[in-house]
Image (cartoon, rainbow, N blue to C red):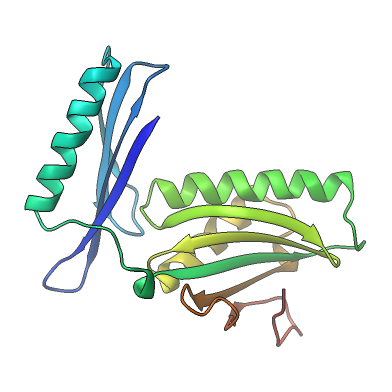
Length: 185
């Protein structure tokens, strides 16, 4: 599958995104666009072969560049960690199910709003960590709280922290259960 996501900041500071992909198995070319943090609008074309899909993707990228869209520089990106406290150090089957639920929920929620992408997850030291790269940390925290409240049964054990992508160890706690005042991986 060929894929690209690009951004631009408007004069009033709003961050917009456009993304396109060609799904060769489905023969579909999809364009998705909107304001970061809000549900996007999607258009698609069916029966698109590989050569036509690549041509459409090239044309899409050229039009985006002409309209002022481009990649977000590394120093303007953020890392968000959604962390759940677990009852055991290694996790249980229930915790692995929670991990799948959280990764799926965050992946879908963030993708359709142009907020970012899930980079991975791990269970260790009595914690489940889901790692997300994002472009708007405030909106990402709000979106993570919303989607994880709806998608998981363990919301009361959720902590959220963000750090600049260029300093991934400088996490600052943005949401936590009552009594939790610090964050560590």
